[in-house]
Image 1: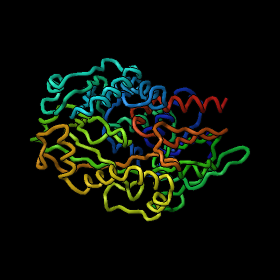
Image 2: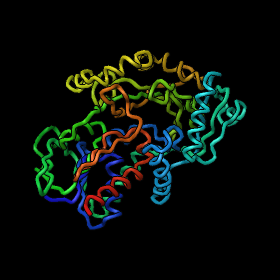
Image 3: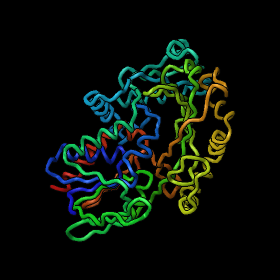
Image 4: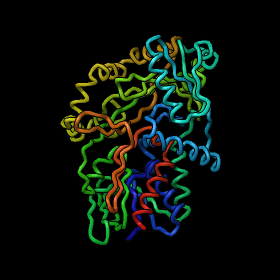
Length: 406
């Protein structure tokens, strides 16, 4: 079976790319291959559900520009399609005096990125917004919001299919061969049995998320990066304790650690989540501490870049592990933001796994990484805010594909 474009990965970025390409070129035959039994099974549905404003990202970076554009596209899409969402705003809190300076740097970055309405606020003003917060100073970010990204991704899929696009589930890409006239994609079905066979395409896009480096290598790409899976675990506030948090409360991130730190998030369908932490997952889709894939873990541990990260961030990594195994340690981190929180106020919640690209020098990439060849696009790093930015990323990839197609 021959297609104009095949996209590997039925997550929110792959589906947004399919939808945006379909919108721009109605005559193209486009297929999405998803290895799970349904779309949006991993990062796309296992996340905090925050609509990001773009305050954290380096001005001019792909993360910054796509977040700003994607934010507008996402809100329009949700309104147009009746998807429940809310722009509730968030506060980023300096809990102690020595966090004032890094908080100011975040504020200035938000100004440079063109955020509307952000402002520095006093401790008293922060308490008006979140009565139980501990703050010496804060930044109010009115553009932040909440949504269910799994719902968004499924709506992308629904519209794409309604307009003639094809989605095949239980289709794990296991081989990619280029000939002069086509790219031949071989897949295996659920459980490893043979799938419907091979599919041919003129152009190929890799949006495989946690396995994007594996799929990129199948295309012949010589990567200098590897995906490192970091599990993020959440607690949920008990219903009787939800009054302690109104909306979104974030800490000032540790500038020496590439994660935002545990925070509070009101969920669009109700409830308050607290988290996530960031610990190495022992398999790429390992959602519990006990899930292990020896091959995948060995691949991570043997990678020189990970070894350098482990040495560089061992203190932070140890603290994150303590929060993973000890509720008391996790709650202690939450109490920096809301001192009234007690261990009895929270119960274990869900978890997710972030795909973070790491280079051989031990640097976690701080931007999206999209590699282009004559007929192939490999999305090799799409961390947060990729869900918020999904329609903008899809628009960008669709534009690149149209240039290739001519």
